[in-house]
Image (cartoon, rainbow, N blue to C red; front, side, top):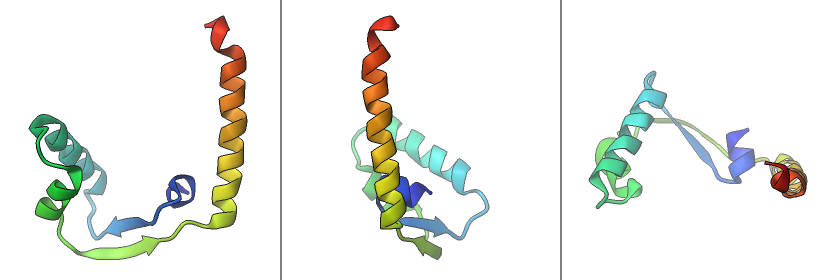
Length: 81
């Protein structure tokens, strides 16, 4: 689903702590402020990849259409909030 929504390949790492590690890596990125997230990933992430999930173009187009509908709905009610 994430690959479809973002229209980008998603790489699953061979780790049981992926979410926590990802959060820690993003925190380091924000605190450091000098290095790119790509550089930090290259420095800290081991290349033990298990799976790469490619986006499904049909699903991606559906998500995109629904996102456009959602964006239009937000614009219609924006002034009420």
